[in-house]
Length: 221
Image (tube, rainbow, N blue to C red; front, top):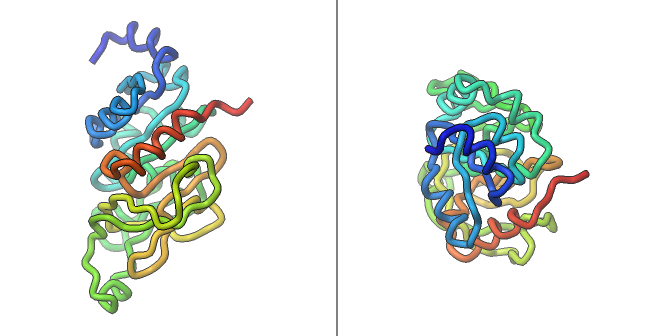
C-alpha cells in the first residue's frame, strides 16, 4: 500500500479507485480494469475516495461481515455522499441496498448502505427445487438488459458469470435482469450509483465491455 500522502495526491490521476473493504475480491477486480488499460488505485483513504473520478465497491462473503468492515473503517456516510460514478460488484451491489436478509442466521437482517431502496433476500429455494436447480447460483447465465449506459454494446442474451445465493428483486431500480428459478435483478441503479450481481471480472469480453462503459462515465454536474 502506498503512503497516505501519495494516495491522496494520486487519486485524481487514476481512472478508477477501488475501495479497500478488507474482505473483498480486490485483486481480481483490479486486474480486470488494468487489462483494459485503466489506471487503478486501491485504498480506504477517505480523502482519496472523495477525490476519485470513479469508485468501485467490491465484495465477496456475507453482508454482515462486509458492512461491519465498512463501519469499522468509518466509510458508510462517506460512500453514501459520493457524487461521482460508483459501481458495486456482487456483494458490493447488495451493500447498496436498504437491507439484506443475509446476516449469518435465519431471520436476522443486516442494515446496508440504504442508497438504493430495495431488500436483498435469498433466491427462492422452492422454485429452485421445482426447477431442479442448485443453490448457490454459480456459473454462466444470460442477461436481459436495459438501455442504461452501463450496458452500451451489450445485447440481450449475453452471458455473464454469477456466484451468489442472495438477490435483489425486480423493481424500478432494475438495470438488467436474469432468470434462475425466478427472475431477479442482475444489475440495479439509482443516480450515480450502480451495482451488478454478476462478476464482470470473470465474464470475458462482455464483462470487459461493461467495465469499459463504466470508465466512460463522468460525474454529473
